[in-house]
Amino acid sequence: MKIGVLGIQGDVYEHYTAIRSLKNKYKVEAYIIRSPEEINEMDGIIIPGGESTTITRFLSRYINIINENVRNGMKIMGTCAGAIILSKDTGDPRVHGTGIMDIKIQRNAYGRQIDSFIDAVNIKNIGTFNAVFIRAPVIDDPGKTSVLGEYNGKPVIVENENAIAMTFHPELTGDLRVHEYFLRKVMGN
Ligand code: GLN
Image (tube, rainbow, N blue to C red; front, side, top):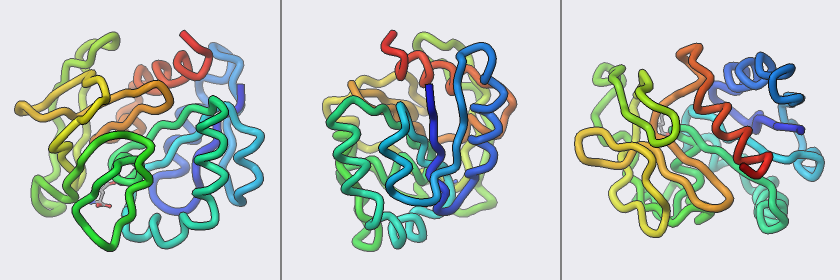
């Protein structure tokens, strides 16, 4: 199995390291995607957290290939800014949501950097997870996705057939259960 981390901006290396440390358990190879054609080789890709206005600016050369591969069964995971990119509505004209997930999201909904926090979230099929929220967005409407976890009554991790999105950063805790969940989705179970 091949998993690529979209190398535009954000905590690319943290996701890459997380997947690499699952190499033996899941027979997975981790890659950092630097050019669109590389996506054709992947079974799954991750769009990391970072700054969605910046990611948007460089996404146009990747988006057609991403959409085509998702239609052909490639799985995709988006964390924080990556979740914003997967949404269908960001409420911000500067940030184009790809619509891969039927979610409506609001950027920086908890406030500024200083309002970042860590708290326990109970995630379906995973359990209690210490979730790191950094200038996190809020999912205002999960649409047709299934909600795997909530915080303060709002969805923070959602899933559809092709994709998983979360508003927190599973790559920053050393707890790899969310990445493992994604790998099992890529494997088809
Ligand atoms: N606030 C950022 C944005 O809107 C997301 C923050 C993050 O990914 N940690 O792009």
